[in-house]
Length: 173
Image 1 (cartoon, rainbow, N blue to C red):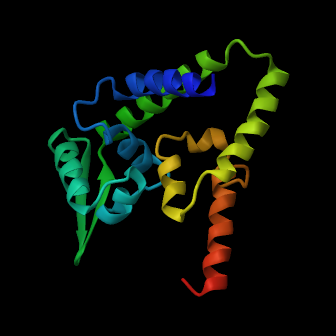
Image 2 (image 1 turned 180 degrees about the horizontal axis):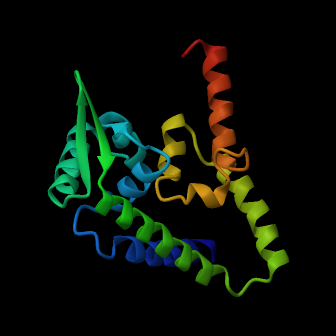
């Protein structure tokens, strides 16, 4: 049942967030991430978030730029990607549609059931990421305001702290 729910929910989310985006399937995640989590990212940083290599990310940014959704800003050898006004508007619409789909999925549950499900999902999410890069990929479509990111309430943000502690202990920083 969980597998069926994940597939059905994933299909509904994909349909909602890809509506109105003529680019690649990774475009919605890139736009939402650039609106919040990965604002003014480099090509490499954006690629980590959407799960693409350098050349794939460059092609994605080329397409988004041709649609006037992003611009590139050069600072020496570093190229950062920024949303245009049109890109910000589309990112907000994608986030809103994502929220609508999730609300409809959760509608049959009572508030206490939603709270319990939230606790269970937090435990499951905490066990999933194996690498730091997996964390940002999980959040690529998140409404960072709703999850409490930056306020200490986001379960993924707390995992980032754990990975940083592990990196410090191993000397990987």
